[in-house]
Length: 284
Image 1 (cartoon, rainbow, N blue to C red):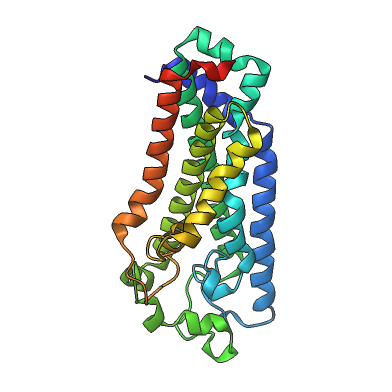
Image 2: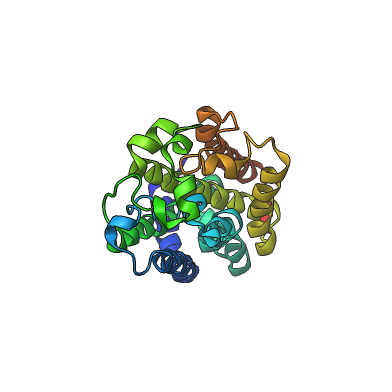
């Protein structure tokens, strides 16, 4: 279904996107701002009084109180990731590239390759930014510290990061025994959501015949609405952050944690396939 040549062509276009550097610059700026906030919180304290790098990572919003990070994940990650290549079909239609590309291969192959490229570039971009933010933490904070190293400082971090609190809920045992692994799981899951929503943007751009604002806005709005309307145990943001936050009062499902972003991705690819198979009039 995906011709190798057209897929490579779409993938090269995705990584050559003019929006990619701006998306990376914006995302890295947010991570650096949160990192500076964390450094100022513990500025002047001895290393024996500060949390380890895996705890002081900006992604641990509940513990570090880096609210900007949570706003980024909840509100900005989806549109920033989609703007890289998720809306590329809009420009393809206006520039005539879609018709030209479809004439050289099957239209289904062209649009499926575009959706796959949108997923890959968004996934890798978000993953690189989040992993980089974790590496930043290792530059300023110790690799390990005693569980009670900063309990006497009176920070909210100490209360949220107690072992009793961490051990509750989904991933509870892993948070206690392998905190870094939980951070990495979150990074991969966030990147997966970014890629899935970017693929959804590509599907919407096909359905709306090239409406760029709709292509980027509809999946973002759907993500936000799902967080508000679905039961909290199924809310995407709650499940996404479950490796980091205990949510001990909720009965979260690992199956839902895995399947929700995959379902969004597969449904997006299915929509792209159906439009590509039966809706060639989108080129008009």
